[in-house]
Length: 34
Image (cartoon, rainbow, N blue to C red; front, side, top):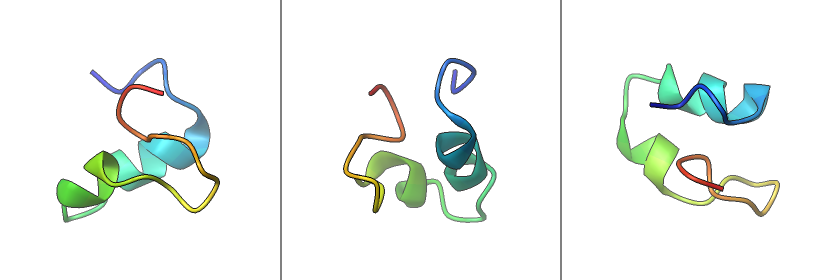
């Protein structure tokens, strides 16, 4: 699923809250697809 995302995206995916991976990351890119 979230294997192609950067390390920051992976950290969000590993978070207890799945929603964190859906919301745009502080970096400005989507942690889910982009």
